Image 1 (cartoon, rainbow, N blue to C red):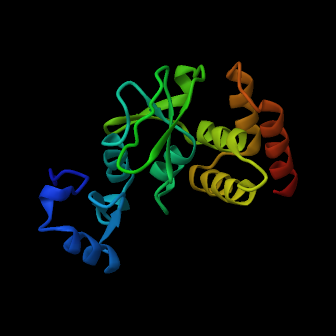
Image 2: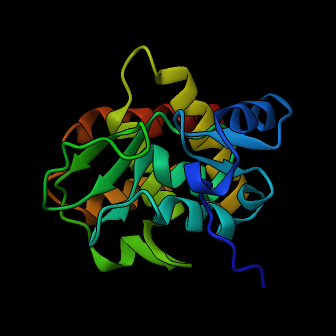
Length: 184
């Protein structure tokens, strides 16, 4: 098993020119001007979980867009979405951390490698609850990809929402899933 660190920092490369060259060649994804990860590491679920582990504050749960990236891959999220009781104001590798203080039943989270993450149906619920009219199209795309990849239906998401209490934007998310269910 490869034991190299999931993030490359300033000390791992000869300099910023090397970082930029590797990025332009498509070998690495830059997180900021000094840190990156290799696309090779991001090819697997465990690899993506290991990358995210370096960005997560302790005792937090990856959720929403961050969890969707771990489950599906694709473009690295602009913000790191977490469920936690603490507030995080500092940037992590150039990314803002969005903290959601939600009560999450144990059945809605799972350990994947070194992180705790929301299950795919709960991730879909978080995406629906956080979407705005501007992000609706991308949220629908991500939710449908999660449903297809992990074989669950809108009814499963509605059940997750019944199990989780005190959810902000729950009426919006319920309508979101009812609309998707009507189109399937």
